[in-house]
Amino acid sequence: MKSFFLVLLCVFGLKSFAQNAPSDAAYIKANYLKYEYQIPMRDGKKLFTSVYVPKDQSVAYPFMMDRTCYSVGPYGPDQYKASLGPSPLFVQDGYIFVYQDVRGRWMSEGVYEEMTPELEEHKTNKDVDEGTDTYDTIDWLLKNIPNNNGKVGVWGISYPGFYTTTALLSRHPALAAASPQAPIANLYRDDAFHNGAFMLVANFGFYPYFTNRQDDKPTQRSGKGFDPGTNDGYDFFLKMGAMRNSNLKYYQDTIRLWNEMMDHPNYDQHWEDRNVLQHLHDIKTPTLVTGGWYDAEDLYGAIHTYKVLQKRNPNTPVYFAMGPWVHGGWARGDGDHLGDVDFGAATAPFYREKIEFAFFSHYLKGTPLDLPKVSVFQTGENQWKNYNTWPPESAVEKNLYFWPGGKLSFTAPSGKEDSFNEFVSDPNKPVPFINRKTMDMDREYMVADQRFTSVMPDVLTYQTDVLTDDLTLSGGIWAHLRVSTTGTDADWVVKVIDVYPDSAQNNKWTAKDVLMAGYQQMVRSEAMRGKFRRGFDRPRAFTPGKVSRVSFELQDVLHTFKKGHRIMVQLQSTWFPLIDRNTQQFQDIMKAQDTDFKAETHKVFTSSAHPSYLKLKVL
Image 1: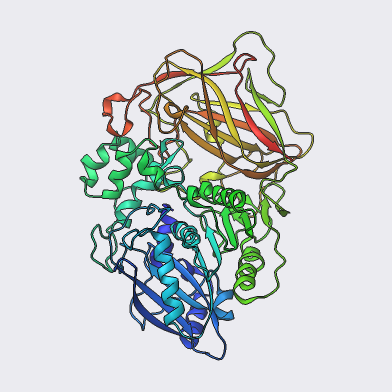
Image 2: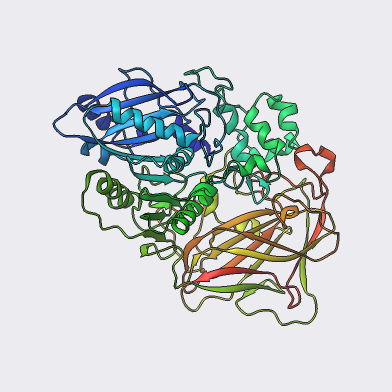
């Protein structure tokens, strides 16, 4: 949820960035009337809600609702959004569009909580959460907005995706369809800490912008944002030093939501309360879960929301769509490339018409529907695939082993000696996550060429022989490492890479200073803070020199490594400033001093006694 790209979209209205926004705006003003309401909730708080109603009242319309923490602006009954709904297809077809500031944000009453903890029971009118707020809103709309057909659809991207998931928990009988898109599912795992490693650059600039109020007083004032005075995030965050300096130098303990992350580096009750997945049972509403393979923010949320819904609600229609998109990239634009990588065709318009619009039209208006349960884009091969479930049942688990000498093989190592590769990781000289200056979590990093890191001495590189046939990974990737360190903590970063042959040709998106020949395209990557290897709620120190098991999820892919390519894995212990730096000493890193960061020597074992490998699903 926390890329600056998305922040800008949310400030000005995600839908207003359409290429045909001016014509949409003219059509909306000519064909819709706007109303503003303060809708009362069961505990007496009122939520600010904008409603756009078709002027043509000859037919009854369903509702399409988006609940957001990013503002329903522009405010004022004579001030109209430039476009409405998930795409322009909905505007022309006719819906009653509803936008609501969630509790504690912008013009709504109440005090805001990040990912409001959902309650299993609501015994009194004071037991409120996003599910009850959605229920009360739907009830009010049905009774007070004339000419509705009694059906409600809800959609939202990123944080609004979470609010769409909680709409499912309202279990209102009029909720006929919902589409959580890139939803936050577990705030600890999605946006704050990836396997315990803090997502530094994504969060640092987000909270000053996001924090426009910390009280119960409605406002139209936006957050002030933060000006670092540079576009060189690598240099800026090195000079900032330890994480505690974020407050000592800049925030001065003025941002409550930032401090909540600093105060809870372990997965404790604070985070468990914000894991909405545990509540996704007894769901009756047809649901379309959408995500992007290159979503740097909430890939986990999309994949796991689908898997939990599908597993725990087997009799409910649950659909899943994943394309080659960044965070929210399906909502506008073509989705035909990312960075230097070409996807062969425009993928986003197909989703908007054939999947999203078809889904809502069927469940809200009764039109025919011929939609596979799973629609996923296969990168590398660049084509859509349809399945009954995800991952495909035909996928077979295989282990891809690290061998001595930097080789990768599906055959386990057989050497009797305890072989290993070692490197020195110095957190004061961390490996950069992208090969350019930036103060943001640039979305292109997820496919970016990794040749700039493969030559670094503190990055281990392993690769297969040239593939003699296509090889498709379909489903989850898990890293199972056997490691040791001279310190008492360490981060472990694993990157799965598609190495192009020397014969690969540039495409129309290739940057002028880049060659696709020998390109090392990142396919999937993830970090793991080693002290959480036995559980994110119980950190454990490494014993210096002792071999330890470190296992973690890199998340799902659907990618074909073409004949003539190679599979590469890079392994490192810093990834800056994408994640914060580990002092490599067992301690609360959020309270560490600048002098606590120490260089340590790490070993990755590649023997039969202590094998390191990736567990893959291969079609």
